[in-house]
Length: 364
Image (cartoon, rainbow, N blue to C red; front, side, top):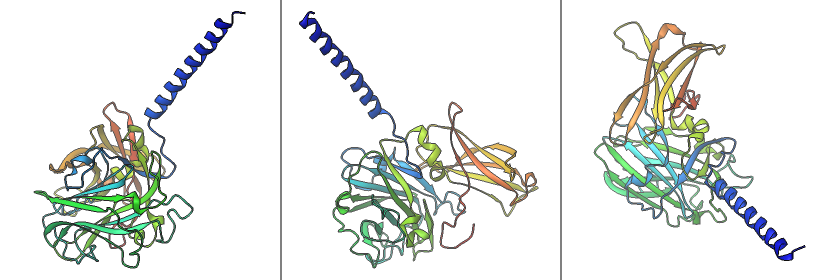
């Protein structure tokens, strides 16, 4: 046997195998990760050299959860939360519509004004999403205002002032012609032992506090309810991803595009039901929205296309709206399903009305 030929064959085979393995690994690295069971939201990777300066342009492709798009006060309630991460920190941002931005509270009670009440649990052990606020999780507040002046402020919840050391925490804001833009940086240094990476799952809730120039009088939760104040178990599971992918809509549409319906109190003709669906500002892939009315036996009673209407052009605050006859189904005798499709007609996700209280009073 020719020894040189034998070794050449071995080397060639190893090169081919190595090339195939490398190609497989490269493909795997480029492929979107699968979302873990129970994940409801995402944090997309932050761009390099993040600056906390009140300019939200860096959040243009970030995962977003709209809140209060159905409130009657369209100039003072709708808001958008954004979420990102990198190896250094977690980043969040809030964009609000607000005619009277103010936070008159002192530095230790920031929730008594326009602010964010922030619930954050990155624990990876058996204590994650437990029923108690303990070391490793943080309940805190951030705002871009001191009185009516633009000034970033941060504080911890009273009684839990040793939750983190507040190393490198940053808050910055700017006024807009329609409200406020605020961004927040929470470095991982405050959570010893935590190592962020693609696929990591943490838990959080984001609450917008509203004051209309005085003390807090209204609050809206992106993931949970006032129960989040009491226990981290109320928080939503959030997964770290590279970027938003079409296949993520199925699990995350409920917080990206909340939905509700109601019967307007004043109508010129026979009563109609109006359905609404919030649209995140960075949703270019959405082709159409449909509202499906279903009987309690699951039978489709009707399906109605949503027409996009703009709440505010600045910040791209939009929602889809549809109407159907009040006589189609009696209240309490039907279910509403929102269906979101891409531009090719492929279904992205489905949404149902939230069956929980989300503000300061119980009810639905």
